Length: 140
Image 1 (cartoon, one colour):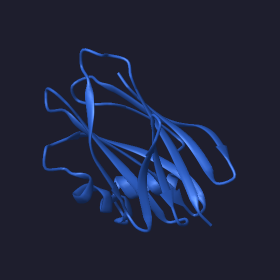
Image 2 (cartoon, rainbow, N blue to C red; image 1 turned 180 degrees about the vertical axis):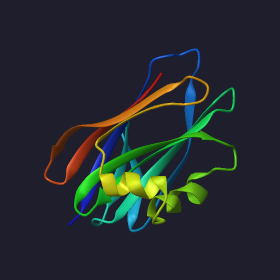
Image 3 (cartoon, one colour; image 1 turned 120 degrees about the horizontal axis):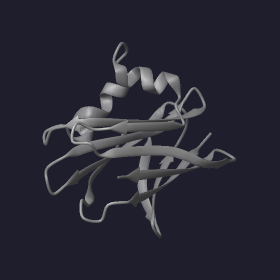
C-alpha cells in the first residue's frame, strides 16, 4: 500500500531565514515537488524521508517523517552540526534503542522543539485521507 506526505514549510521570522539544503529517503521512497509542497511518496509502511534546514548563522535541524506499522510519524532533530547530514542521520531513526527510533515507534503526529539558540520548530499533520497526509513545518 502506497503512502504520500505533502509537506509545506512556513517561516515566521523572515530576518532569520532557514533554507532547505538536503532531502533524503530511507527505503523505497522518493521526494518530488508540486507547487509549494515537498511531496514524499513511499511504496509502503516502514519507510520515511528527511528534510535538512540551515540558516545564515549555521544552525541546522532535520525533520523526519514517514510511516511505521501503517501509521504516520514525525520527528525533529535539533542542534545539529554541519556534518550531520540527512544521509548520516536518517538511519538513526531505524537504530533500535536510540531516542530517534523511539520517536518512530511512538508515531507522533505533532512535534514541538526549541533548539539551543532559541528557535521554535513545529511539525504536525493537518489532514489525512486514504493513505495521504498533509504536514506543516513551522519555523520560528
